[in-house]
Length: 287
Image (cartoon, rainbow, N blue to C red; front, side, top):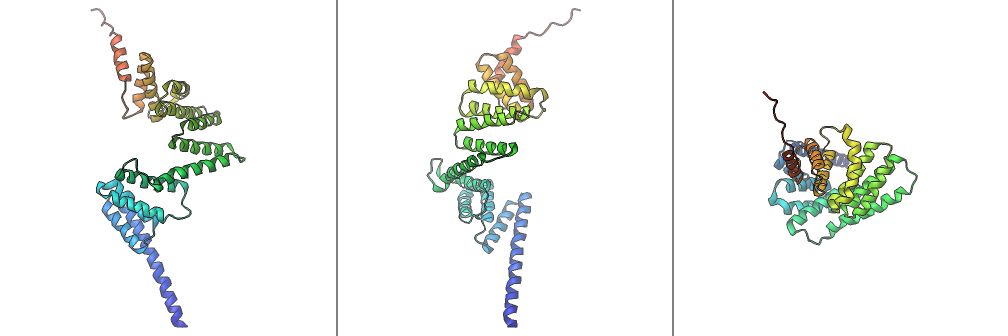
């Protein structure tokens, strides 16, 4: 009997050491990643998988390192993401699942082309549609305003990712209405709507009223590094240039480029140059 208990004790002890060694390897891998020791981190994840060959997170993290750091290891990254999908835990969050499948889809498309047909890639849209259905059902519940805003925001982003832009706009407008007690927040949702009209639906005339409404609210108290507002000013400058409103476009360009460190450059630069040329410098005072 003593011998049996001795064997059980040894097994428990060895299992504890085993768990500790894996945890230590994970800590080591993270530290090496932070120190940009990519090969060292990969070696640690590989050792973990030799001990626990069904560790989802080790496959996923190693796959990320392959994909982000070595163009010759795309096939290895694809295999790691596929293994991570195979061994994903049942309690994996929606966000984690989307990240995992998206990484797999991205590397698979890099290898096989963007028209590749793959059941795992199509799962991304299936999951997003299922999540939209879940969020929609939640909206029928008795929710406070904060929770309702959170749900509409997530659903709007999912509609946009699924290229269902009109539905994303509907949710964006709902968000602008829900946050009307906070003018700045409401204005930023109007910029969200403007961006969809402008960049995704290529309908600048529909975007312009939302740019106008939002910029009017946000500009007076804007921070110097407000990139979101700066980008909106630059987009509006392009629209105004196309409408022949060069003076207004130039004003937007000058304000916008100060907020966006690496600003993108379109026709509004020409509008500014033209407006500068049109204004002759005042002559110096007479001697």
